[in-house]
Amino acid sequence: MYIIPMAWLYVALMMAVAEATNDNGTVLGGLITFVLYGLGPVLLVLYLMGSPARRRAIKANEAAVAASQAAEKAPAPMEPQPAQTDSAQPLSSQPNAGSHAPAAAQGHRVAPVRKEP
Image 1 (cartoon, rainbow, N blue to C red):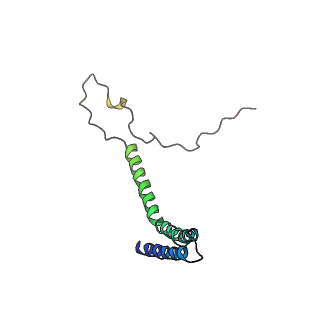
Image 2 (tube, rainbow, N blue to C red):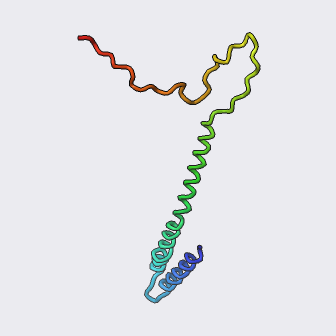
C-alpha cells in the first residue's frame, strides 16, 4: 500500500535535487519543489486513504464504551435468601430490586377539578 507514496516521494526528491543543482536553481527552490510536489500531496493522499480505518476505530471504541456502560448498569444477580425463621420479616417487606416501575401509568381517567361558580 505504501509503495506508491514512497515512489512518488523518490520522484519528487529527484526533481528537488535537479532543481537545486541546476545552474540557475537554488536549494530553497529544491526544498519548495519537494514540499509542494512531493510531501504535501503524499500526506494528503495518505490522510484520505486512512479515513475508513479511523472511522472503524472510532466506531469500535464507541461500541466498547457502550458495552462497558451497559455492563455497569446491568443489575447484579440476586443472591439466594437464607431460609426465614419465625422472627424474620416476611418477603413482602423486601424492597423492589427491579429497575422497572411497579405499575404502568394510567391514562387521563380522572376529570379535572373545577371551582363551582
